[in-house]
Image: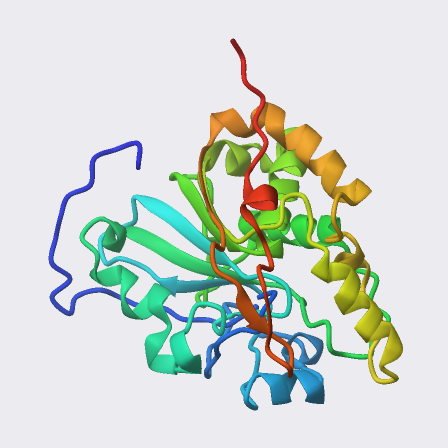
Length: 295
């Protein structure tokens, strides 16, 4: 997986763990806790609508931006960044049963012999679709924020994280996968992010709607009909075969062969909404990454 062989070692309580916070999925997330961001978040970063807080069981969705979850004692051989999807958070998406103790990127991954040698981070962005704001953010905006954070974010000591010095891997859920694809494309022709882009070696897509989903149309209609919420531009971009996704897929498929890519998608329907209607949010037909094949 990594450019240099890993040495297996026992953590034996010696691992240094750093936590910070963030926000997360297309079906609602899992949890957060008293995570701290590497820099002090603004009040706007920490705010959440009453509807969103109710949906997440009253949990604070956490800070936005890049956050260090775990750092090995003796340097790291790779960086692994987790990115949530629509309506999710950096803690809840990756925590089972909304339990702080089951935030598995911190609780379980550092116990794995290979992965314990990697630094683990999370990235949060404002994917809350339940608030009534007139925010105009789109996938491109989130992608640019991700690139900027990867390049300039600092740790709790105020030191640059020096991303791009070791292989960079992404684990991305839902819309988070589209954000990473867009960031990868944007960084291709920007010398400022050259070392970041070159370091990206693998992406693990979890239920990412590469060709969009029909449920995005349903969600936007619901938001438009509710007086306390508004439709969001980034939801419109998730509609089936939207122009944004078509352009992104056409560009990405030419350079995707440079990366190691794994895609996971649903094979069983999920209960959705108060009446527990069952559907597959992202099917195999839209979850596959299109690649340019050179014969």
